[in-house]
Image (cartoon, rainbow, N blue to C red; front, side, top):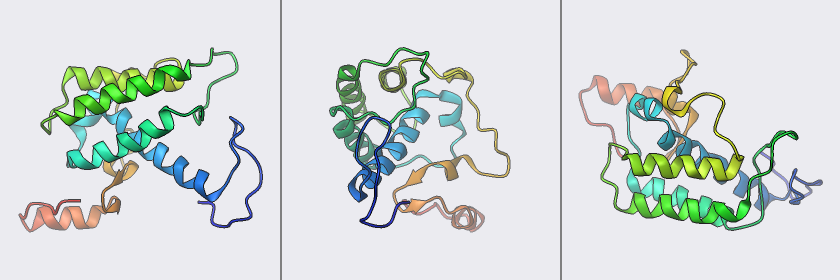
Length: 172
């Protein structure tokens, strides 16, 4: 992560690179990773732990602030049409509204569709890999390690220790 106040340059959308930008960018990336999980049923089902609803709502609310702006951090290939950024805010708001009534752990088809709509408003096209067939293809790294958790990065050793001791894992 960028760690000083003497940052220079601009992001692809013209946003100046500053400490505030770096913080927002990391929050947007973390939120987008969880939104992608909500859109992909096989990946969601593969999680060994479900994050607290309040945590997902915080991430989505952070993403909503970005979505309502004109900033755009997603890479769009030159040959692809740019997405209409005015559609992002309403799509993220719908996802947030659905998550408010959500009862974990299962993702409803409506939440899944809303998460996919957020992706489409950000990238302008679906992912190359089907949402329904997306899988975690890194056998040496747990799926959970690719996501941020309430306590920070995933701690596999602590997770396994809690399971071995036959204790429910602590709330992350």
